[in-house]
Length: 235
Image 1 (spheres, helix red, strand yellow):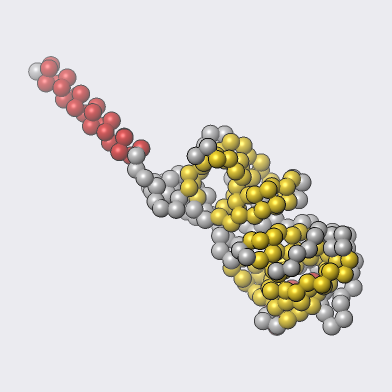
Image 2 (cartoon, one colour):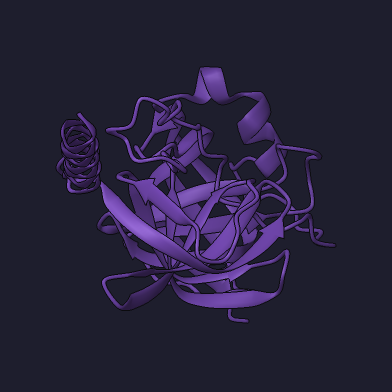
């Protein structure tokens, strides 16, 4: 009887071990990336995380969350930003992935959790700028205030370049300010094929778009697209 009990216990242990191994070997769904936390920097609206994936180290930015060194994270949707300057920590990242759907549990787990909506890429704070509008043009504040009636129409705006990211989704991304506006209407996003530098005074001419969604959680209430840029003063 005792021998039978010993054999039964051994069989149960083998069965449990096999089940655990099957769970451990369960593959991730296609497109899911698994990374390990090396370092984290929490800031307003974001947590910057240095991670490793198959011995490759890189930075990601996720909605504010608390992580620990050695923790495993999962994601599939991201947008790469090159030469990204964070105004909050005054640091330039040669490359960083802004991740929308970060998870702390594997997506094939019953405890995986819901997708988290990513905040917009942080913009520079309002700068002490005072520029008059170009003839026949609008101020930054006016573009926001009149965005619905301006949607689909061409506008001209004079502003100072406060942020510039080149070659993302086959276009360049320019933020300008002219000293007008407050809260969320002082910084205007422009897409263009033209190249500028931080501090340049420029005049842009492009088409106003509203509620634009570029994927990976990046939606913009107001944007000026396909703009032609005239540089009035180099930085």
